[in-house]
Length: 193
Image (cartoon, rainbow, N blue to C red; front, side, top):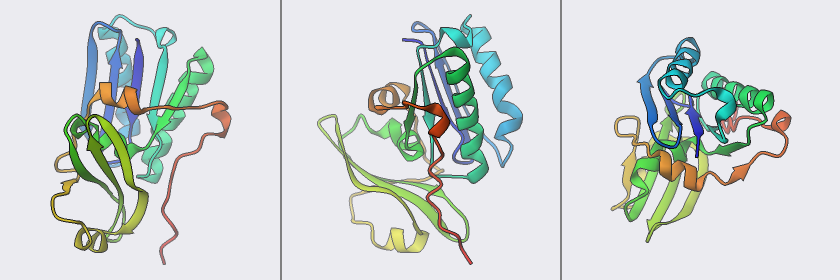
């Protein structure tokens, strides 16, 4: 299958392209500058794989929670490609993308992404025999409160140890978008005073 995965919810831009035989993958750290590099990276990947956007069979986009601008960057590109080339679009929690490299091993994982003012976005996943169970859905919470209440034995995933696995992402991205014009990022964050 030929597909694209894109996530710009965190300080890391994650891009994965495959033509079914060869892969192109980029994890690039940035600070509010994903929009400056993303189209060149996509173009480079398509060229290296001898592909065109129209040959994609599926697009998978991380829709948050995460950076307000970052979420809009990836989602705008994915929606544009999906609409212009009639390619099925699937959405997935960005936290699932950031922790996907751990999901081949049994265990319980707390995945976090930095928010503002001592807050984080978090999710807790349990993996048992290859099956994923969400123990806590995407949440906006004070970092200290989240860390203090974590049970022992839970693997904490932060921007220091994100791992990506495109095959896992493809497998768990089941939310097919019916109307791309209605898809919005999962901002999750409430206004802070």
